[in-house]
Structure formats: structure tokens, C-alpha cells
Image 1 (cartoon, rainbow, N blue to C red):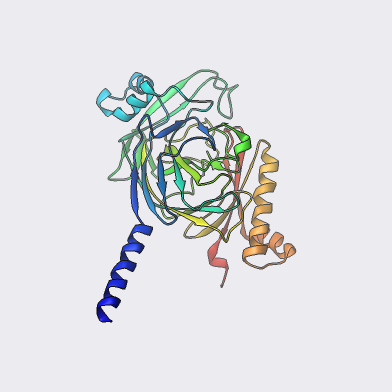
Image 2 (cartoon, rainbow, N blue to C red):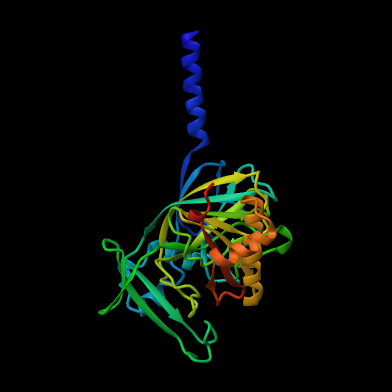
Length: 336
């Protein structure tokens, strides 16, 4: 009996290990989706719910553009050169997204819980740029400009100039799943019900993003690495860079969401996404009220009042087609 019990423990440990496997996914011409989210994209990796994946992502630029702006050729990643040269199936957006990842058991109507475990810089520089017809003030800046900004990983600052240093808060601008199959291929630029290009600077290491699932397997992608960003991302770029992130992907059968939500160590976050900023704000607020009613068991009247006295509404971004607003409410106000 003792031998059988020992064997069962060993088998259980083996099953637990396999159920929580660790994977690694690097960007190559065969493991990226350039500029789109699409439920018909073949997955490049299959994982189980609860598995952890280290995903390497690439800066949203071309090697020639980076070199012309002053980046030494030996600091341009070879994977970026390979993908730029070999990938022809791309667009309509510009982001190089690593994936998609098929999560076993994920079905439409479920929620993908994305636990952002770690985020590391992959290169020692970022860029910021604007161009004609883009950004929030295109009429004021009708010409192109790009600036290479050194990153000091040891001190975790960006050296914007000799007199300006910006604290680094790395996050992924784009974390998303496939949209509904009926949507076909959609642009990687505007965020939507699939999350995607949220550009939410709160989604740093230690936070969790909850994304409603619309296609079998979820088909998760990551990209658009930012070393930091201001709310609004007004010129259409942040501190654009390459990042390596570690994510735990969990299928939630017990959650049902219409729009992405998030949780940080200190706050609950709801989001509004719409081409009109007022409508995006209303969506974020209504999502917060729904959260407070369903998760904290407040009446709708009290939820509306609490949102007014304790929640902060922030402009996430203004420049990605669909504008983003997020509402943040501190966890510390809740006693249970």
C-alpha cells in the first residue's frame, strides 16, 4: 500500500508539472502576425490553461528606419531584419505581434486571464516618432520626426536629453486575442472587444488583464513593447522598444465579460473603447458600475455614487482610431 501511495504521489506531481508547463516563443518569420488580429490565423504554439509562456516581441519599426535615425547596425535585432525581409502577408496595421497562442479549453464566451509575471527590456534604446496626418495634433506637426532615446536598464530610466530622464515602466501596448470569426482580419491599431492595442500604461509586471474570448483557443498575441508612456500617447508613439514578457494564461469559465478589464496590486480597472471620447468614457464608467454591482454587491445607485467619489477616469490613448478611457478604483477602500 505504501508503494502504491508513493507512486500515486509521483504521478500526481508529474501531472501537475505537465499542467503548468513553461514555454518560450521568439519572433521569427513563422511566429508573428504583422499588423492584424484574425481568428483564422494558424496558432504557432499550443499551451494548456495555467501554462506560462515567455514571449519575445519586436519594436514597431524597420531596420532601415532605425539605422537612418542613428541606431548602430549591430544593435538592430537580427529577428527584425529577418521578419522585415521575409514576411509578405502583413497589414492593414503596423505592429509585429508574436503569436498567436492556442490555449486549450478556451471557447467563445470564456475569459482569458493574462497574468503579467515579468517584463524585461530586450534592447538598450527606444524611439518616439510622429508623422504627417498622425497623432492628436496632425495640423500642428505636418512633417515626420523620429528620436532615438537610450535606455539605462540598470537605473531604469530613459535619457530623453542631457537634462531629462524618464522613469521606465515597461508594458506591452498590444495584448489581445482573436476577434470573432465573422470580423475577419482586423487592423492591429484600434483596440476593441478583443483588447489588442490598448496602450494602457497600467499593465506593467504584476498586473492581470482579463480579455473576453471570441474564438476557439483564444489565439493570444503580444507586441508593441513600450518602455514607458504618458496617458494619451498624443503623438501616436510611446517609448517604443522590444520587450520580453512572461505571461501565465488561464481560461476562466466562471467569468463572462463584454469588454477587457484589469487588476493591479492596488486597483481594479475597467475600460471603455470607442471612436468618440465621450462614448468611451461612458463605457468605462458603465463597466465600473457593473463591476461594483456584480463583484462588490453594491446597488446601482451606490455604485454610481462610489464611482464619483473614489474612481479616477483616465484617458488611455487618443490616437488609435478607437479612443481609450479607463476607470481605476483603489482596492484599499474595500474592507472585504
